[in-house]
Image (cartoon, rainbow, N blue to C red; front, side, top):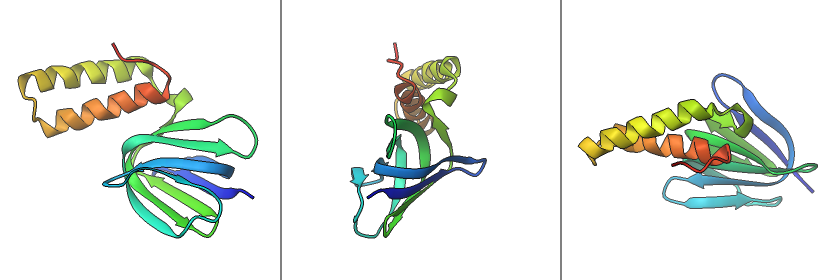
Length: 133
């Protein structure tokens, strides 16, 4: 049995199809994995990685920057404010954003915007398979 999965952002549908497993990071809940038969669930997404294991093929990774996940029956809907597939990440842009966030945090370690910008850049690089310098 498989899950019917949709991962969407305001700009587009990033992925839709059948998957054996979905893993996402929720606020205050950490990473959670959904399999067929999962109890109904609604949660807010943290900036993090979403991993889908399609019914056929290799795992797919996405960087999501907030949003919600809902599980109902064997359907999983992920609605993200901003999301990118691993092959859509602009690595140079993500590295530049990480460097800018690090500089801002060096001046003010509790700069909330810089902390979030750093996490977003780190997730984008992680999903793209790049280890930050």
